[in-house]
Image (cartoon, rainbow, N blue to C red; front, side, top):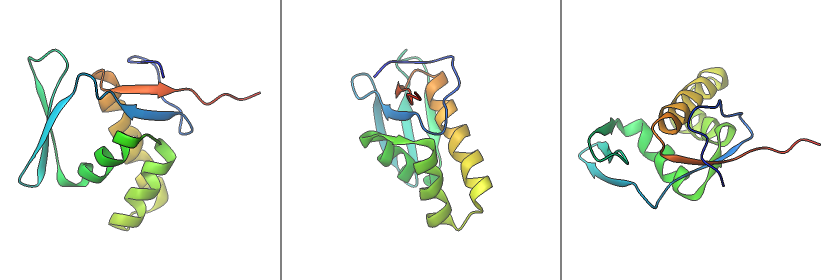
Length: 104
């Protein structure tokens, strides 16, 4: 896997959390994530927790969208939009490794 911090992630690209440098904990119904710089953190709401758990094992944006749609009864276009925004948020902060979808 390679880090792509400033490139768009396609729905079929496999993404996974970078376990080597991420400190996080659940506090109440939120997830607090210390960024790799150690100088800032993210506070994620409870709807992000199942996505975070899935990203620990690796997933595509499409798979995350399916998870959101089924868990929160969202229309598929809304779930895809929300999943893409979440993945982009994490990627731009250097929290993800990305495996690009290879198309021959």
